[in-house]
Length: 309
Ligand SMILES: C[C@H](O)CC(=O)SCCNC(=O)CCNC(=O)[C@H](O)C(C)(C)COP(=O)(O)OP(=O)(O)OC[C@H]1O[C@@H](n2cnc3c(N)ncnc32)[C@H](O)[C@@H]1OP(=O)(O)O
Ligand SMILES: NC(=O)c1ccc[n+]([C@@H]2O[C@H](COP(=O)([O-])OP(=O)(O)OC[C@H]3O[C@@H](n4cnc5c(N)ncnc54)[C@H](O)[C@@H]3O)[C@@H](O)[C@H]2O)c1
Image (tube, rainbow, N blue to C red):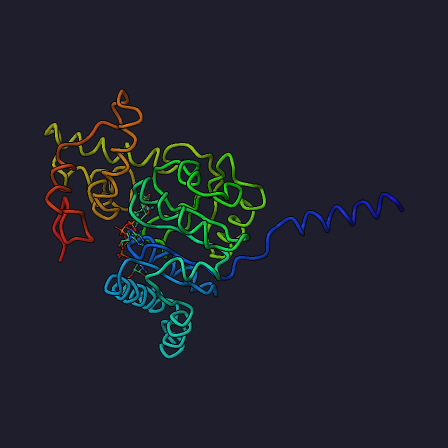
């Protein structure tokens, strides 16, 4: 009997130790990734506030979310266009926008950051939000390459801070890397895993190591393709075709670099090179640097390795 009571108490304790479900989400940064994360969270019934620096950027993000949703709906509701239209409206009603993050995080269960890939800027943002967010609010970064522990160190909630690394395009890519930094509590990690599943995504657990799993493999591969091109050992078109038809990749490395954003790719590689300059995989690329200096950031700016429009 005593044993049975103990078992009940243990069960209650372990379920009570899991934090309440995440319902209200603030997404900071309405670019490629933030807009996608907001879309998926809103589609799965979460209340989402999307934050960026000005209203023009936000209007563009909201328009992007609506057109992405329409692409999804065109297939999902192929024979019921009116139900599709209703679905889009219902999802859009779950999203609002704001330019002042501090005023909206007060009612958030989770803050997901998807701003520029720069440690100081991310730390500045989280440090400010830490002072105004409720105790229970979990902070997560979508960083591609920065240590979660370094970003979290700007706050006093190391236990309620983790990584949620989504993939581009977020509505289509099933994977999310959930990162448990040394300070992340098990309860926070469980909440982030549960949230990822509630989004209909497949989580994998990652240690807080540079590039986690996917980018540690993918970014050096893409940079090796650029170096092959820089050496004149193949045209970018041939390298792309080779990797699609010969290795079964959906996009070639130059197409993918343009898709990810050349600025983001450069931020990632520069950061790793600074930390480990002897690793040839992280060496800077003259062509990548030149394109970024010229404002050719890939698909999002209309030109990168290729031209768009
Ligand atoms: C660097 C970071 O930290 C980490 C990263 O994110 S690395 C990047 C990871 N991402 C990848 O590797 C992406 C590789 N590419 C792919 O998987 C595929 O090319 C892709 C899913 C992007 C597009 O699929 P693909 O069949 O090649 O092309 P496409 O014809 O444009 O799309 C097919 C359908 O997918 C859907 N779709 C594609 N993009 C979409 C989007 N953004 N929103 C909604 N639906 C979309 C649509 O239904 C579309 O059909 P439609 O054109 O009639 O609307
Ligand atoms: N592009 C990708 O494929 C990809 C994939 C996974 C993760 N990431 C990571 O996600 C983050 C965002 O990448 P992205 O490609 O969406 O970049 P992006 O350039 O498309 O968007 C960044 C957005 O953040 C906004 N922003 C910048 N500073 C801000 C601030 N202090 N407050 C509010 N908004 C601010 C910018 O106005 C911009 O709209 C980066 O950390 C990147 O490494 C990118």
